[in-house]
Image (tube, rainbow, N blue to C red):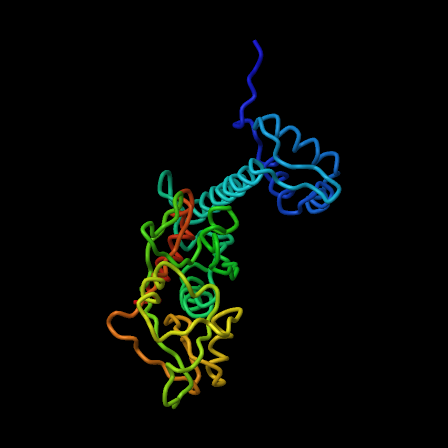
Length: 306
């Protein structure tokens, strides 16, 4: 009787090769990164495609481009490999912590990397206090923070694609947590008017803005305002906005995190009870949301904002 090949036959080394080709966009580059021959990488990908039953990469002169099936497969592969890393880390933590059968890993005994994706103001003003507390209570956890623009898929997309274990994300709309992920709100931050200190009529100034400063949490409020001009200065990020305002080039509507440590050369004016707010929270995959490292970071994030 012939044996049916199924995706369950995929081995970890095949997943690593798949992820490497997706990352390097070429068989030769992936082979070099993994210390393998190009033929070994090519043979592995062909075998994986047979098992999956789909073409995963388009081969061409410029390298290997993932097909839609390949992009989906690579995202799942990254998540599976990360779960295997977590299995090892927590099993070793349980052994070091003498958790006993079924006892689980003790928090302080777990070691390994915790990959965090965060948008700029969260990385600057929300994460540092939490990471300091995390280092004190969980010295074996090594955070790696990547700043990701909160545009398109944003930080949640990094988590969904398996590139981050947890994302600090702006949440909003009718579905606060993206489909397929687990998460919750950490804080609600209000928006305020920021303008050059001492300006007699700040609302007459041109608006300074940046692409990330527009979401479902602000659109309705913006539509109701008749005093805000179209953006005449569009900058790269909130730091550049604050610098422009500080130097007298305009006014801006900015969330509280972006205004942390604002210089004395700007003035912050409350927009009243109808002001817009932004929900900032965390997102993780269902398989990693309850890992020791992710749960520890979430506890410290909540404690840092208490």
